[in-house]
Amino acid sequence: MNTNILDMETVALDDSECALVIIDQTQLPSRAEYLHLKTQGEIWTAIRELQVRGAPAIGDAAAIGIYLAALEIDTNDYAEFAQRFHEAADYLNSSRPTAVNLSWALNRMETVVKNAEGKSIPEIRSLLHDEALRIKQEDIDICKKIGEHALTLVKPGMGLLTHCNAGQLATAKYGTATAVMYLGHQKGYHFKIYADETRPLLQGARLTAYELSAAGMDVTLICDNMASTVMKNGWIDAVFVGCDRVAANGDVANKIGTSGVAILAKHYGIPFYVCAPTSTIDMNTPTGADIHIEQRPAAEVIDMWYKERMSADGVKVYNPAFDVTDHELITAIVTEDGIWGTSKEP
Ligand code: MRU
Image (cartoon, rainbow, N blue to C red; front, side, top):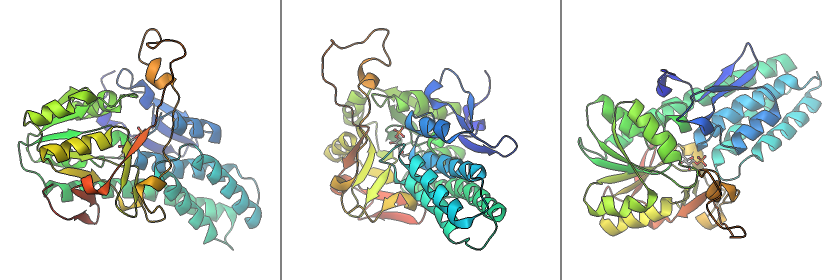
């Protein structure tokens, strides 16, 4: 297939089919194919199985998904509609626990229903339709603003390291951590980008390296255990990562391995920037220790990428999907509203 992945929409609503349309990210980069999801079960599974993933994209998908649920609630009674809508939101919210954008987007959709008492059910459905598309459009605008702020932190020709995929495939466009790369690339900044492969699900190798090279950027894939070496070599001037939840004290949950990269960056005196929409900030979670870290199946570590199971039978596996980076290790958090941190240097 010759389609450039960047011309495909990560998440979309097909009104005529009443379907959530996503790129099946589990098949990338070998196959770039859309999935058309109609039932709540299909949408729940797509989020759970990472066919759509990345905090903002999960929020966009959930907003469209819950709108589709509203189309299926066949009642004209507001109280019954609101109750069944709430149950559907709870169900989608149970698909993944760490990225706060999921519950944030569902809460926004529930607020539409709460504020619409007295309106007809078709009117409420129409309001939900518009809110879902607004959430997606805001994601694009916010990522662009994050990129504009982050551009003030870099210079042309810099070496940038990123972990996991906080790119276009994790958002509706630009990405969070990659927005600075896309906007810098448009300005001819010629960054040298290093993408951690990101064990065990390889989002860095399969997604970040893919989309940045599709954009024509200079991107080099490294194994996770090479981050120290490229930093020591002097090839990295700044680290940019995304995140799934920012606690009230500034601790940040992001893809497993992020905290190790932050510790290395501190050691080598390299600025470590976290890029996040303000919707990822969760003031109800006091510290990183209060963030629910998703645990995932052992098969992701020992089976998935190998012809045969690569570890002996009976070996125990620990597979947390995220870790928490202490706020002391973070140079700044870049949001659509500005840069939050004590200094531009570590
Ligand atoms: O398990 P994933 O692939 O959903 O994890 C994604 C990440 O950790 C991203 O860095 C994060 O969601 C930010 S996406 C802009």
